Image 1: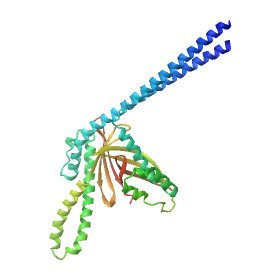
Image 2: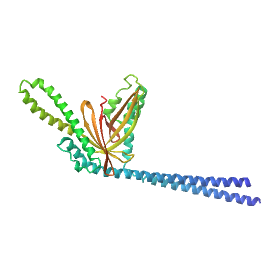
Image 3: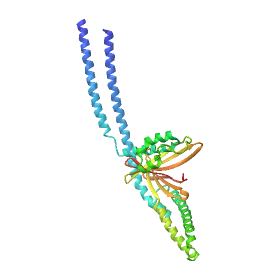
Image 4: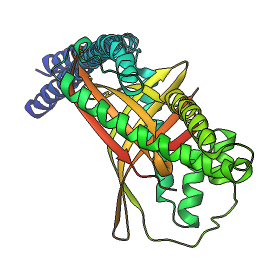
Length: 153
Length: 192
């Protein structure tokens, strides 16, 4: 009985080991398949989507109303702007205006186009602050992943 | 022995379940890939198709605003009449704007030149020339963009035209499947 018990135990351990090996091999195969799948994504709009995210990110500039928000948004956005825009928007070390009321925005739509290597995004949004509500339209121009021009109509 | 045996059976079942979960991850990725590629293909095809058709209308709109007639018959769309009506609105708005600019220019010139020439001849001659120049400048500054909405594939053909006091007119045609289905006319108010 004791011998049979040991035999069963041994068999069982072998089965478990075999299963573990199979799982490991299938995991490796799965990793390779996942890598293959990653390369099958249609990349035609890859840059468009990335630049769209950047354009949306720019709107955070509207929310700057004190030095804390100024420094935070300067850190996250400054290197994504052209030198001229950096100077224009974040040219000062500290926030030089008076602390204002909170400003919120709600993006209603974003649409984009590509022409001669420059992405232009049209953003329609609503700005709300201190009981004041305003609908705005802004065009954001992006080249090589850098915002080069902003035009609010 | 029975307890150990049950434990090992449970262990085997657990290991098999882990294998099953990993397969689910792969399946989910495949579905995600298929959906993503389908969406990209749809958007790119829509954009190309709508761009071709809307391109044909761009010159018709510009000619309609600055020319003598609006070629509605060349616009094969259910919105042809609406486009035509909006072009008339644009013509009137630009006409008012150009008159404003002409008057502004003449007022700044008249102080220096009124004594040298006959007042009436000066104003009639220069006013027409000035108006032509100003209209050409307004026309040259019109921006026409073809914006893609990456959610629904609708192409927005936007004409952005300068207006008085730093404001802008946004005249947009909306295209889907090669057809213009909607028109919008908005006057933005400058933030400055």
